[in-house]
Amino acid sequence: MENFFLTLLVGLLIVVISMLYRVIKGPTVYDRLNGLGVVGTSTILILITIGFIDERVDMFVDIAIAYALLGFISLIVLAKFLSD
Image 1 (cartoon, rainbow, N blue to C red):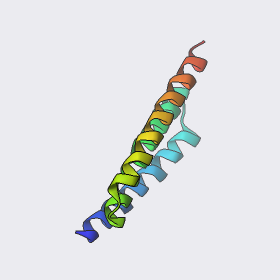
Image 2: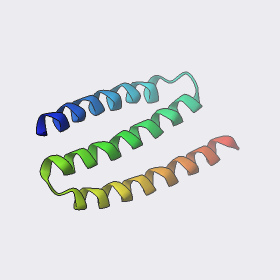
Image 3: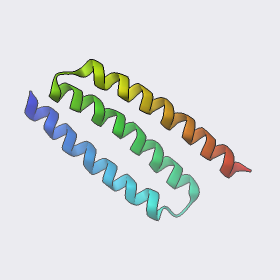
Image 4: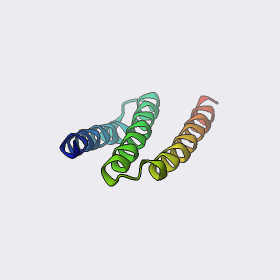
């Protein structure tokens, strides 16, 4: 089962790296915001996967929830700032 989680972790890291390229080289601002959203969601999944590997899911879920709230609020603020 640990091999499954490690494979999932590697796949998620590949997604994060490819989306970071989209954030840096995105043709429009909306592509960059979309990339940031995907990076945030993938980071939450990475935290949960690390929790399963470390067998301390409860601690990592708390961290993931805090990260999700911070990421959501920051994306809303950036979208509001860029829409004006």
